[in-house]
Length: 352
Image (cartoon, rainbow, N blue to C red; front, top):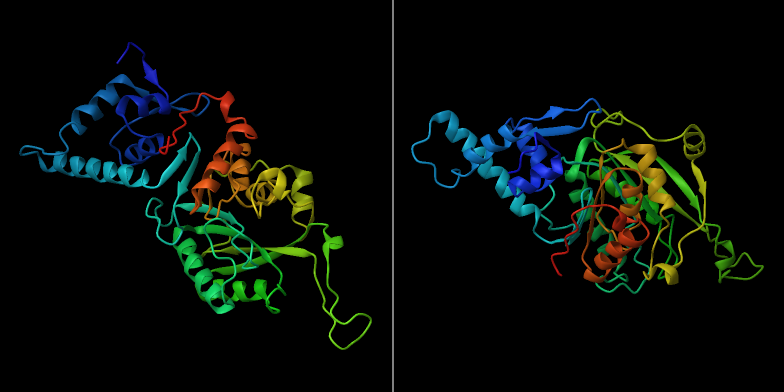
């Protein structure tokens, strides 16, 4: 170590050879102490880091430790085990963003009861040509698949955690189905509690192509050129965890608490993804339903819009996608549109 008196979280993590998130865990366990600056930032002294290093060097095979020391060594070993597990399937990482090339159904890198808010737009089952997902399942199989990932999301949320679920109101391709109603009922059957639904008007009414029986009551089609954002929560609607710091402006709060949102969708051609949604959608959900510094998850991260919104609003963002190309797309959008290159963050892509 050099002669610095105190170190930032990032500097301390580098010295100890662990991630900043692990620094927070070992501090919470009382294995490492910090001091606070007048601005509320953590700083670690050389003495506290030396003390932790001296203890951790022996955790693999302690020789007749005292009961107290044995307990501390076991705690360190447990934390290091979590640290290793977190790296599994990790595709990209910077200070506040992680992307996992994995499947929400079997990912083990995220702990239960750790997520403040989930914002996502899952596959709609309307035969979109994804690289790694069958989007034309039988409807019952689609609901079965939906039930599995909803259950996983429920387990990952904190007790006061919320979910903003962007799904179609209904669908007519392959037969009329009440998608929004069916998925909402499915979520409630798994333990989710219902709060409300926002109607998103994408202003795409001109795209309609079928009327059924023209000018006749025989078999007309009714098409709603809108999507839904269903707002669910786990156990408690009133949020008690987190920093308690909101960054939403008065005019935003007034506009966004109106249950009809009107803004345009995103261009597939511009983004390079078959079903992107605009950053505006997750930005509104994040600022309205989470505090600054909260952990936000998108289990179907796709083109990375949710992670961009997390980065721009000072939240911790976690994205999951089974397709490596979409993980790369999310990463590139963070680097280019998010301006990550202008910051001195540790950027790690384990695929090179």
